[in-house]
Image 1: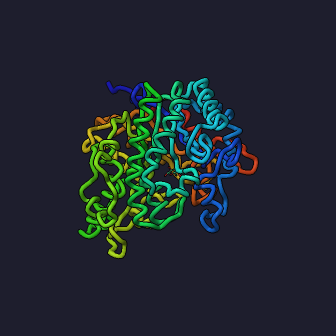
Image 2 (image 1 turned 90 degrees about the vertical axis):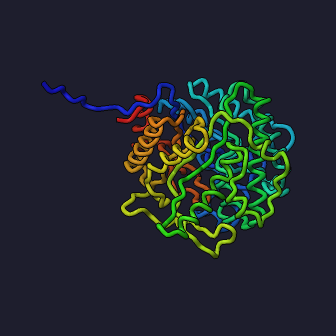
Image 3 (image 1 turned 90 degrees about the horizontal axis):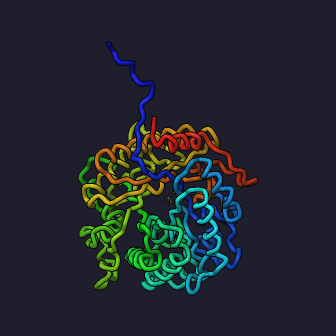
Length: 450
Ligand code: FCB
């Protein structure tokens, strides 16, 4: 007698797996000069001609600053268990130093209350790229003092919100904002400066350490982590040159930010490659960076293809953004759909970095389809399957945040790239669920994939 096959089978996630969505302050808030907020480097950068593809800025964005209540209601309707947002440093601490401004911090305090009321756990990112312009005027991340400035800011915000917000992320993607901000000039502050990059890359790590220390004392009983984007770095070809180039790129781009935080040392290869920059790493710095953290946030989109190029200083390696694996589907950004890459990153963390607790703090794709975004459904489904495989293998993956809750200001691409599961009409500010939002709500509800 044959047993009837079950109609559907479910790939179930662990019982307390957290399902969320992510955004960041500059990309959604608008209100660039309300209630005492000062300018950030992104306010400045957007005003420089030719920097943003459609000439736009985050001045209005999703008007989340005034619409946050509706947005939280939207999250609730999607069944989200968690929401990752970032604090605008110049909104809560105008000019970047000194006392918190009551009006600025009050916005986030109300947001946190609203989330808790809706049963949604806040995940607070302290820095998602909108540095106060006044601090940039003092050198920004190239000034070693920024480790103290950031620590003071983190402590003040922790003191103000830490009684209710219990999950903290110090920095969003150090490797992206340092590379694009200081090496390629594509992001604020728009510099092409190798020496500046070298200093910034170390001060960013130091600042992470200071912020963890400050949060430990000001936001007790919190879980604290940081968010990196550690894409798999693959050689474009099988040649030995390209393989070596990929190793160099991985060491400088990924492990420079991962190793000091998790292992308390810089990778040898990167130290060798960056030696000409004479990065001022002082006694005690690595201890300051290597604070115990409770989780690692990983943002994941695709993989990088790297080739050897001797004309590139120090690294002698370059990323080929137009290269695709044969037959691979890709999104509007040109990023390949490559879910095995997520499995690869989680496996690397498990086997080489003592298996930290991980949250995927961003994952998603850019699509011009405004409402029926089947590609996004396929993408999210495939990446979640890869994540599930990693959990089966023993990775300690505790939650997942889709990027993004809603369409928003996509940095140098302005409003030309849509990452939301919720569509935003930027004229009327109307929010409309896309196919992917319905799919995500069902996934969250059943805590699994069909
Ligand atoms: C990440 C950023 C996020 C968003 C996505 C598409 O690198 O953290 O703000 O721009 O890319």
